[in-house]
Image (tube, rainbow, N blue to C red; front, side, top):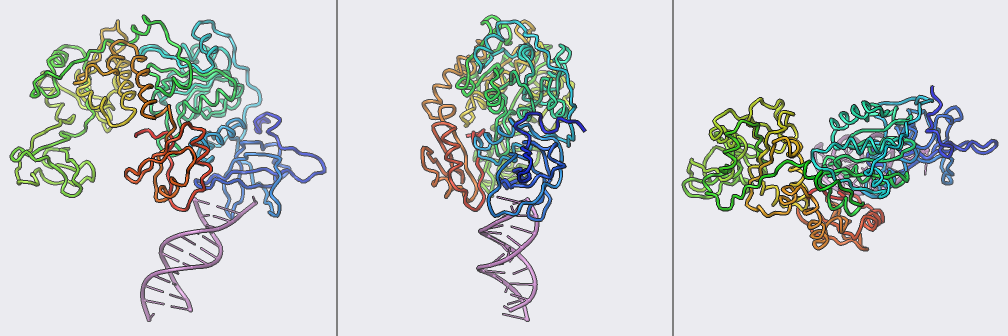
Length: 592
DNA sequence: CGGACAAGCTGA
DNA sequence: CAGCTTGTCCGG
């Protein structure tokens, strides 16, 4: 049994004063919707192993439940007969992370337990190693690190081909750093290379205990924002723009926001690294860039194909795309439409083919049957208007595109969707966005072509532009830097769009500055704070909020709340008493 | 959350 | 009115 179980710091230990009443601890049970603490007596034989954050077992209403100690040495309310803490389960999140969970519970209007669960070790940790060597502090020189430390909150814009390792290693040279990446694979890769550079690393979630023991730079995906990091000297979020940093279930916390708050609380500098920082990032911190030359060199050429004057009969395939397909380099064609056809019309009466049950557009998944994309109802290929059996494809899906591309390229074309297990070996691939995530290393020097980029640029979401830019970044990474011979091709009817200009000129600032202005005018984040409320109690609860919160909607049973900032939004959400009935609160909704 | 208990619905 | 469902309350 190690001695460091209680987390080490004096104020976390229970006050054991001789002659006074036995110590009482406050426990938050690990129950999904119960956001209430209960007090328990701490038996003397457990007192040395219990501090703020410790996972304990307690009896609640005749049941034995797990819970976290959230305060020690508390005075219980009068007139309650206290039970004893039954047992110590293991080491839990350190006291600073327990406080952070309380902050996040307000910020995202969720139960504290949801955050403490992510902050807890994946398996029971009974004890931590008592002695660990200290983290080296070499203090790497360099202008970039100096800029980050000076800014305290730095938004570091590096081009797609640049390696964030330089920023991470520089930060870790100041002492134990916390590094959050957008993917598990990215975390493992970064951890391996940091170790190779001589940095002691704890890779989350496996090495939770090693992180808690201290003396290591902590690396992990989203959940690592909640990892223990004693003596935290700096925080880096790699690919801070990535949507994977936000939890998709409620509470919808965002790892970069959590990581930034942690850095602020620890008095440590924080760097958000991204090729395409969002308006939120720029509202939070100061932009740090590399030279124009270096940024340009880190983007591949982005070729914009203006399709406004093209013959509509050429469909998704411009002359320049066909040229690319007939070359000898790898080409990945991206089309965010699954199935064979996404929109059909009758060849006889020209009526749009719609679902007879819900009226939604039907698509063709396999030859022989059409399926409604809204309700899933399938029926044979027959027009419901005139009974015609010949349907025209108005919007091609990837299965159909694969056949057409194969004919144009004169070669085999592989198809990749989210369901594909192995990327085919073909030189030409077609797939949805999922393909972009899975392009093999041989794509460096090759090409990525977006067949219909307008679908991304014009998507009815306020983040459509930044998401489109993020797609271009992903494509740019796959094909490599300017000197490698790769290229990104974009077919569009909006060739002047700011997002495209940003990528063509390797200057994301062109887009972000304009976008931030637009968000201000439209009163969208980061100029305001938003929350989406649904569930049968949503209507009654939303209107009762009052204060600075504006209620919009309902739209599809959901209410949109708008407040001037997150502080006033969180205050209002915490103040309003929760009515009975279901209530789902999504702060910072991902799709509006 | 999950048990306790109370207030409503059905069947004879 | 027993026997069961559905809802609200509460736990240290």
